[in-house]
Length: 580
Image 1 (cartoon, rainbow, N blue to C red):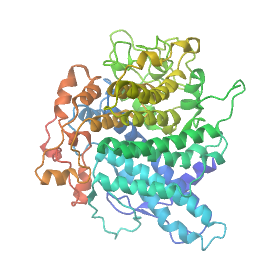
Image 2: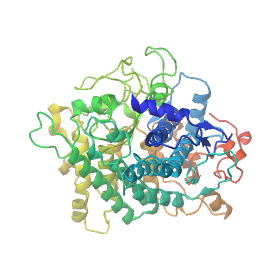
Image 3: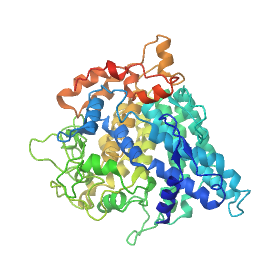
Image 4: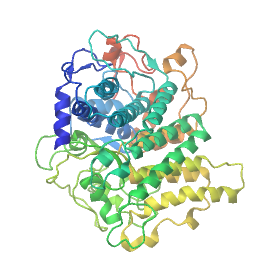
């Protein structure tokens, strides 16, 4: 309760005094505010609260999943939001699209910048605010700011980088975009600085929300692993893949050291993961699970409640969310047309039943169950009827990182480190380590009576590098579906299979030089659109090059800040002709 009081109080201390979207301009009440340790704590909590704001959580869902093969727009809802989703689905995004908006993320960045600028002076006023307190607060704000920018780069590519606070309406707002290389370098530098004085996750008990609600050493290392994996994929950098592996190992070993053995756990688990029957409730309903790394503590997650469950305000389950799972979650066809929950694993992967409510005959989309239902899936009983949510409602945390995510990041990086010029036996031996990580994630989700049916090395030891790359991607889809990961997985896959990406220049600069943009990888496009049915080929045709992977710069921000340059494939809103 104290946490949320502080968040609310800090938010009330901030008022907007500049009419702009590109640079949220916050102002503390007066100079009397920055006097005590509690003042700084309130502002740190306000930064986290800004990141957990509904406007951010909704965009994390749409940016990370809706553009992939996981979601389609529900047929029933109508209005501005469904229209905006239709634009995205048709690759006909207007510059006024509500999801092409970055102000909410910049609001969180500005709060981080305010703390980084003002907290130091409190040490000379309040003796209770020590150097150690200051360093820990700065560590969190540097890491949270880096995470914000990492999301912006993955969705807009070229973004303004601002590392100072906006507190006065007279401050210059003309900030140009930086190339992604520049922003990512800043993020890495901030995270490495943050790692010098982090909060140790091991200093909290497994029941303490701060262990995963604040950016501890585990969270910082997880963001670094993710960033290095992204940059390695763009630049085909073996050094970055190795850095990803190293940071994943730090998190994995840390989680092992924090593990508390269960009553019946005579021999410690290789990885501290909940058993299949307990995992769903532990992770998605009880929240802040032992295997979690960083969760945005949400009091009202509209992204889950409105977009996945119901757009109406009715208290029952009769409403329909704005988006539904695609047909690829419906069965066992082949890995090219389905998630593959039960293609290989004999109908025993409990994630198959936890992910969606199974549709009636003839339906081509699925209501999402994951993060909605409070009821566990402990056997192979298929779930068909949507359940009304219970006492916990839909106020679920937004999970940013958890242990299986890091395990599969490591597997992805290890696969990419395999040298295909080596002989087949040597390659197979090198591919065995990433396979065992996939195997560990998959096995924990299997129905307990059928554990003998898990992935076997003898079945997959003939896989080459490309096949193992897809196996890792498939397992990430099964494990992390609807958690805001899939689109970024597909983008990394795309970048690994194309040449000539220039992250040192903005798209506008490349366009000014009259140079062609890099074409997208056809196999990535096949995966990204496979849930679209007959529309797939048309969508693929519109996603010709790298520019289409990113959202347009918000038109309102270009009006306010004319030094911003639009992504070259997007036109002024008035020039658009809707075709959806």
